[in-house]
Image (tube, rainbow, N blue to C red; front, side, top):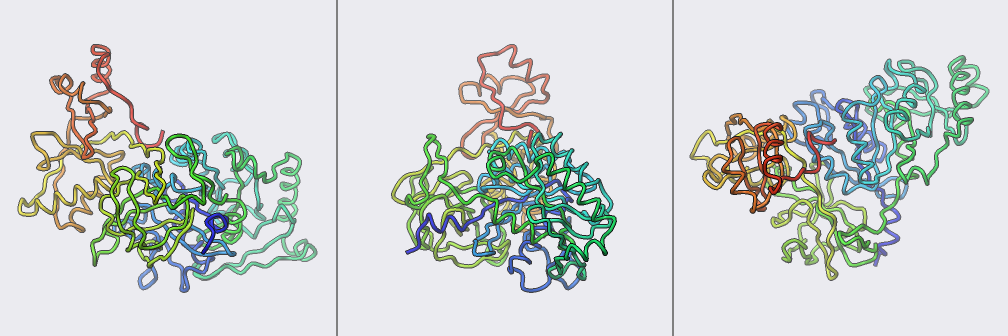
Length: 528
């Protein structure tokens, strides 16, 4: 029988984060190409006719818009390691999904556009990594296009993120004329060669120092001077400061042309920490060789249109998982079967017989599970709560065709359970006209698309006057509901939110009634 501790040492579980359009999803697919998980041509974000589409962007709306809307889990082997890759949405409106996914990762790869550097959402995602104490590596993408200089990008990382960049590779050439990289640990120069549309692994030629002096001057001399400057500044990769979140190993490349992708993947295997004992809600840690336990970090339906099933994404935290074991959901105390456990590869999946700490499982039709639940065998486990984000956009939803009300109600409940959108109900209207609450307006577009295409229940949305929400309680509900410009609505789990028409009015209520419970949620306006 496999040893959980030994198997955990082989796992590398990480998330990819970035601002939209930085090339995150393209990089995800190229990881799969280099990991041998894509036997055929790699596709592109906007797939050309007749070509394989992006593996991680499985939702129709994602492929139409060319952006990641929901996170995806992919597993493959590389250099005798099992790599669990979590592709996250880059768009601010879906930052709550990214936050949940980071709870299942041991590290992150932050992707920067060489022309744009640190963007607003990049900074917010970094702040979540820092809050969750997740170490991160940096991939400066699109260096084959015009952009900022390598030294300017390092300065921007240091000044904006207050973290020390420690390049592992250094570019030879300028943005738009990218020839290859120098490996700082060996001094070797690797030249890249383009492939047709980046569809195959890019040829990499380790050039002798003598030949490089002939072929790459004066670009090579300039790159060597910059490397010497980095050496003088002591900017070498340091595992201790990386794991502490004080430094970030930096790689340069181009995901579209596959330049530098293999070196980054090697860096993931060499630098991303293997799973460690998981923090529990009581402050203790769950030993890796304790009986099986896992964290449900995401619920997703609609991945398989033929079966319309529902998947709970579970990060294995301890022990050896075996398909068919009877586990317990900590929140409900109920047992459930794991007969339909699967390993995930974007939209595709296969039956899995066993899994170990760091692995990501898909438990099909475990309908009582919710995001944030702990599941376990033999020894109870409870993990820290996954917080909900404070919504800032509120719209009332009604089904267009009343004969489709049953499907509408089922769809609304499903989206609520997934965390795709927050569903709030008042006692008088119930499911007839719930208020949908979102971090960003694009969530309404996704909800409408899903209700129409997955559940056959088109809905109409009407605006409301509410602009801000606070968590409240039963003791405050009656008084708040008696006030003009305030509504207290309930989530399915019974928790209450007080909605206000303006922050000014909310501040007035707080000043006049300090006895009322009005608490901030984890963040205003997404990640902040």
